[in-house]
Length: 148
Image (cartoon, rainbow, N blue to C red; front, side, top):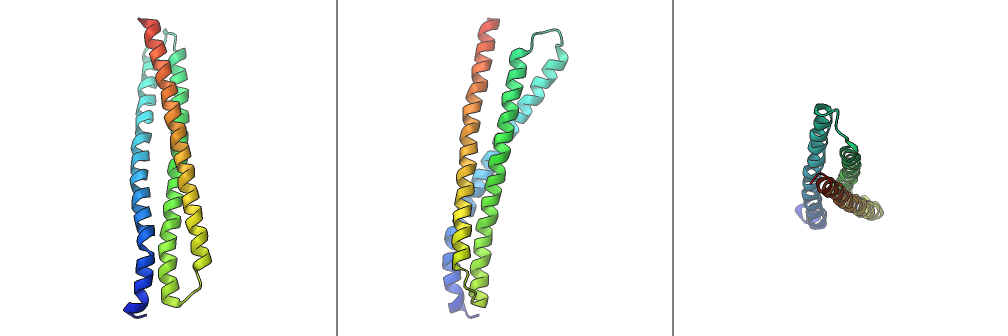
């Protein structure tokens, strides 16, 4: 393969590489967001153990919502990783297609569509997590007003 044959593959791989970068930043954000409810659950569980005589209905409800958030964020992370794997596969296919003159166009289209769909599903899970975080906040506000 000559440099002239490689240039179109390099040009075609720029957009997927930018998409990988964006999805990677999103992945970083999602994993950071996942650590917050995990730590909060640990604190609330320690609180439940240290104060066994108190009424813990609000705390248990918060733990349930926080755990649901963790599940949603895990699903968002998994979909995001699938998207990154598919995008990486596109770059690999572009170079293999250029190297061996394989007709990979249809496969690239399919992988690109699937990667965008996984990214969209990831964002839907992320949005669901945001809604649940507000539900958890409502419980905390309601509980603090009841105590005051």
